[in-house]
Image 1 (cartoon, rainbow, N blue to C red):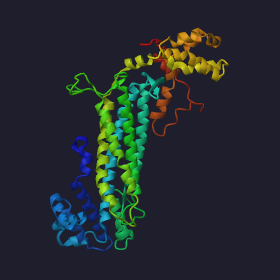
Image 2 (image 1 turned 180 degrees about the vertical axis):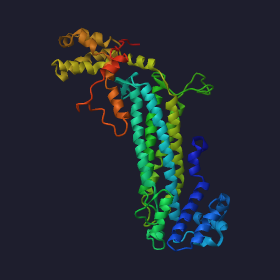
Image 3 (image 1 turned 90 degrees about the vertical axis):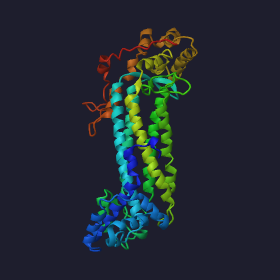
Image 4 (image 1 turned 30 degrees about the vertical axis):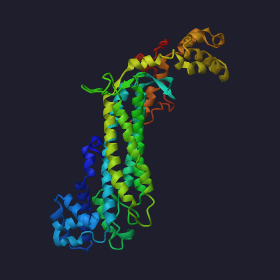
Length: 471
């Protein structure tokens, strides 16, 4: 992955120096276990740590050896022997290359998972803070891109919070699945190495033993891991796409922070573009591109082949580094997001009250009008408003069939914006309830939670009326 979309901590996990250090630790821990069960001298196991434990492995030297051997693990072992001396003959006893490679990859993916989980935690913190900041800020909800009914901007952010809380759960599960160790020798039979060695290495490397491996750890684990990353990346894209739409000139309800000295266009000095959100959309595509190759790696020949190897050397670093960068960037976008409540109100007013049509429909049915007839009455008064031929409330009041069921006062009461926000506290209670807390949907009597009319009234929301004006 290019430096432009990389962060140092995640990049370090995939650096050759880190990989060789992990390889050494796997081999050295295996020697400790072999010494403990009497296969190799304890003095040799101790010497391996003393002579190479603090060594900085020479990447160029290993690469030079590999040009001759055409085998990366043998090249590493050859270089390791240059430090250890005669005791190097006990290194890699009964092991095969995949024992080192697969266990190392499990360590790297586990460490990468820890960073990604921390990234999500930072994003969740930003989403929660901004969600409460705009908990009762009215905005229009859209379906099919068209104005539907009122909601709050805080609910939009709460939705994203819940989505990334699920993402966190998925990453934890993915980490658990990928964190397995295989030190089982050629074709996985433990013929030349005791299973106790695997158990010890797994413990020391923070992994668990693979219940049964062939000569490799089964690749369905890796496929599930990269699929989980792809789902998280899609959540990044969903929120980024929402921000991009909200920043459109015709909408402008929210906007990425535009810093001092920032330029939006090389040609048009006035431009303020959602470049970060657009960038996140593209990065999500890169992460998702790892899924198909990872799935195709599952079907290896017999007990192993290396068709998966080249794939994982690329998608392992690329997917984790890219997602790490994307999550951090998204957290920053949310943290600094510019929000425009006045524009939200302006957009709420654009359709002259049409966003209250369902309330009118339901009120008519409560008065005994059939749903089919009520729908027709509401729609025939709504369509002229779309054409700019009147105000919805005025047309309803003038409709004799509507007037038979609903008085002018009753119709006016149906255009109360605050009505749509009465369950915001309930939803926030569901999303942000502390773990293990009782469901906010049940009151003291066990019934469904009551509407928190008072808190809304105190905030001045319950009496908000729709301004019935078209631009």
